[in-house]
Amino acid sequence: MFSAIKKFQNYCPQHESIGCPLCIQSNHANCVGILSLENVIQTAKTSVLLTSLGQNLKDIKLIIERVVKDRKLNLVIIQNQREKFHDEIKQITYRIKEHLDKIEQIILQDLYAAEEKVKSQVEDLLGKLAEHTEKLDLLQNNTSAIKEYASDLQAFLGSKMIEKEVKKHEIFMESLFEDGSLKKIDLNCTIEEKISDLVSAVTSFGSISEEKSSPLVVGQTEKFKQAQIRTFRRAPTTTINHIKMTFKRKYEFSSVTACAVSCTQDVFMVDYTRKRLLVLKEDGTLENEILLSDQNPADVTCIDDKIVAVSFPYSNQIQIINVLTKTIEFRIHTTNDCYGICYSDGHLFYCETGRGIQKVKVSSSYSSTLVKDNTLSNWSYVTTSKDKICYTNSSKNTIACCTITGGKMWEYKDQSISLPYGIAVDKDSNVYVASTGDHSIVVLSSDGKQARKLLGREDGIENTFGLAFNVKKEVMLVANYNGPILYELC
Image (cartoon, rainbow, N blue to C red):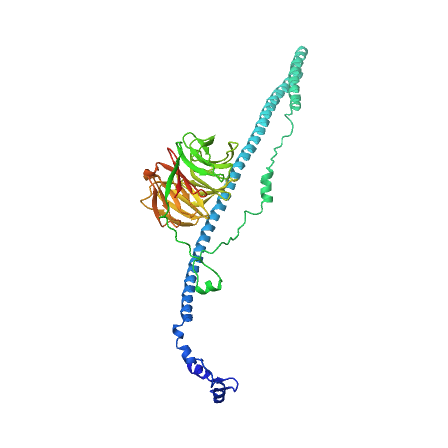
């Protein structure tokens, strides 16, 4: 190869020869500033180009490794989603079947009851006819005996008696025709049109589609930067050390287990003992009070500026309430006790003891298990932030974070957190937790790797249940059971 290069450097294209003396003497005799190939290649191994190529190769390999890891993780997520949707489909099928079985039993009971009623009527009539038949047989025998053995006087008297009895039988038979006892009886069964439509109109259980979003792979090469072919930006490292909060206002209410802020900045609080929903203005003054129909409401979340959802663990239900009319618009019944509740994009997410995080459309009564957690205990709370869901579990002293589709992202457990109840998230996805067991508020970084105590008893934290973070105002509502407090970032 090197000999070929050496030959090539003396090649004359005009005379088609290597080392042409004529060209060298005539054409290049006066040339200055031209480097020979030997001088050029002396720095090739240490050139910027070779260094750049080496770095680009490393970068590309690193990106490939990240892409492989990301794609494998995506496969795991897809599998988890498939299992979740499979369970959801099966659960809906089971509920439909359970409901159809229930109404089937009702109509079958009605069917057999109708048959029994007709059967009883017919058997009662047959019994009466049998009695009349026996009496008629006796009258026939008496008539024959009179004809054969009775005297004229006996025949006359006997005939009158028999005539009287026959008249009774005739009246009985006439009554059967008049009162409809002899009408033909048929059973009719009318199937509800909606059920018939279900068979004919509903031809699909649903639809499956793919949804693509921005890549999660982090990394780039210098060449990619320069050419602007594709940019992968590294997620900024977040720290929670700078977060500080200061006291702003205390609310003079007690028995408060939950709080929420609407899009119009109204504040909602749940009065657990007096079973009422408090509506406060932004400045903290009481604007309205809604008496709730069931005992011991636990949590509240805003759906819009007029509608809220309130959870009732002891009656296993969630009530959708219009705060303007103070009426219940809809009830969602849960299998077990439901405590923490939050709203996002048309869906309610709620904590159900012994089952996990459930997801239900506001307008539907059919829920699905988003995160299965058999250990989920009383007074667990849940919140959403962008494409994440975070929830507490006081039975394990853990805070968990998962994707909006239920895929687990991280779980935090540390002795600094005791009986975690309320949970909230700020605009940077930092997580705030009410550590009720030691009367403190702990803040966690968005990746769940950092945590520190933010507020304590000395700051007014005591027996805290729910939390609510107002991202717009950068303030946090802390639902102390005996007096909620508003804190602001400083």
